[in-house]
Length: 139
Length: 169
Image 1 (cartoon, rainbow over the protein chains, first blue to last red):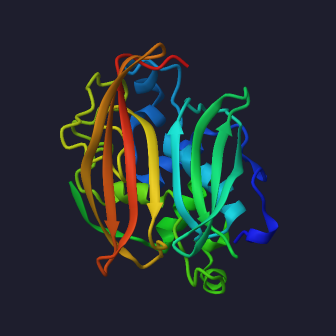
Image 2: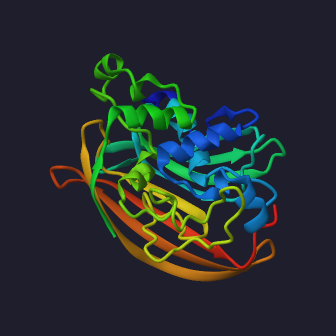
């Protein structure tokens, strides 16, 4: 858990989430989440019927990977809120970096909290997820 | 729609954590997890999405035998996904569309051994024009997950979008 005395607004934490995203990892996520939408695993359907250049990752896979960066930073079981907007698709072969930046440190109902701004970008610097999170911190 | 029993199981948490590339032992090592403030194995922040596994009629899972499935076999079937009973899975993937936003509020830690019940209600809906995909129709769904004691554990809000045409990348 982050300590109030050791952080300040503007602090940030950055991680590489995945390098050269494998199609098989997308299949793994389909299996664990139960979202078997063929857009993510079925190249024939996705290119011939749906009209996309290839299968692409579940938004929730990117949100899950981004969640790893956040919990590595704020600690396990401390999240109060986590929300994202999916701003661009993630394709097999993508390399993703994710960053959390502290935008506020505050108290609410007797709890010490930190507000984070979140962005995950691909190898071209395009944001694939933007969002925010709130976590409990130690006084 | 509702999911009556969403079993939070350690092996499912382990597989889910692997699939998002998270090696944190809090998700699979019981001895380690017991020694932490969490006092046991917990689920990753986005785990509630996998409640789709416990929705008996989830429209993005092929029926046993594959009948009516819109994904390809030897060739593409040309079928459209049926979105009639689109449950939104774990809090709102888009029915036959794309996932635009997802928000979670955590009220209590989600622990291995919990048994959740999920109820989903539609939220707001709105439209927007976009250069990349034509007319966009957004719709929100809000899922409340309660544990075996009836306590609210997670509120999940999903926003789905149906596009006029495939999104230009």
